[in-house]
Amino acid sequence: IHSTEHGRSGIHNPDSSTIDGLEWWAAYESSRVIATSDSMKSEVCDHFKLPWEKVKIIPNAIDSDKYSGSVDRGAVRARYGVRHGEKLVLSVGRLVPQKGIEYLVQAVPNVAWRHPETKFVIVGEGWYRDHLQYLTATTGQAWRINFTGFIPDHELIALTKSADVLVMSSIYEPFGIVALEGMAAGVPVVASRVGGLAEIIEHDKTGILVYPRNPDSISWGINQILSNPDHARWLAQNAEERIQKTYSWEAIAKKTVKLYKEVIG
Image (cartoon, rainbow, N blue to C red; front, side, top):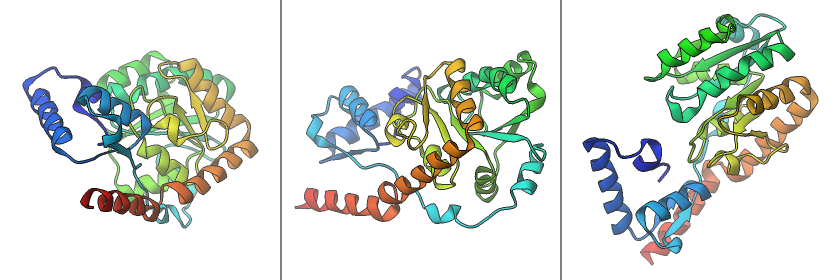
């Protein structure tokens, strides 16, 4: 389980109630339940009333080989309106309230005051987009914020590798695969101290953790990266090493096979 219907958006209509019921049934009938993080395990045990020992933690994996090789950073950045000498702050995720993009948008003026040469690229699609673009207009900084919508994987990889910092301003994040993708791409990550993000990232060693729903904290984290390039590179290097050690497909597959063998007997 990487998220629950109850945790994602609550149970407010027949569809979500049906999904929640199926999740209850599957959790009850299973011999073991795999959760992707400590926070997800706590949520699963609490919501589905499962015994603690029934739920095992195996995180998601990532293919870091996809992020090897080089890209023409200048050309990629230019496609998104980022000129030579400017900084690129990237956000990737569905445009829904859980992702906390509104708090990143509200953080833009504070970042721009310290680093006026900065542009923001927000990748993703969702029903909350109109509200976010309206909010962007109220900041007076709309010209430096680019909502791209959906982009294909190969382009997203190139864009991620071309960013100066990846920001995850989520208010609910059971795991945080986008953080792993940024780490694998060698990009410093600033993320909310929530859910799986707080487990993936070790503050000031493999990234920067900030307070959720807090534009001042988010802008502080971004400014830490942009103001200290040597430290930012050190964080990114540590993060890449952690990816190889903890989140490779080989490591996760071994944990999964071991659990299956325990269940089968």
